[in-house]
Image 1 (cartoon, rainbow, N blue to C red):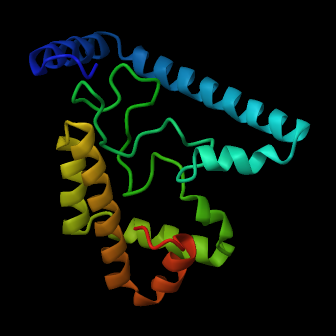
Image 2: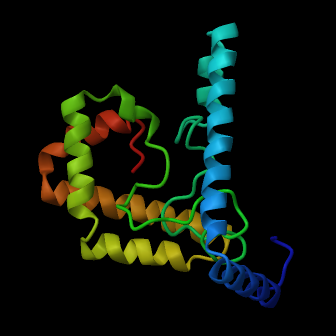
Image 3: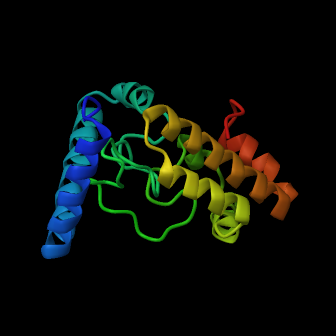
Length: 184
């Protein structure tokens, strides 16, 4: 898709949107197909680990940010190469979601205690309507090129982090535990 012109992308997106409008059941079919693919990936991962437990660390290296399960999901509003959200992909269209819903949790999330996980989830919910987070989410929706998407995603993570720290400065220790490398 990267070799298409903006006009060709717009034409495909318009056809996609009209097809979905004419047959809304396609959305459910895409969601079902996506779920089936995720189920197969999880079953394969589990079978591989059962055969050779040492491959678990290799699988984690392949997808360190989201883990195996969330590898193909896009963050809310992230645009595909057509400039639309999730068109022609097996990913379900994004629902109204918080800043990190719709994609896999950071791999460090499992290292947190249940209380820390709940605290983080509650703060995510609390900051999703923060003006800076909303603006960052909007920038993600408007990003077109891969470089813009990457930069917008990083800015979104930073906006969420800053909003969470402002709402509850004590979460800094949890965030450091979640991202020991210092990433947002």
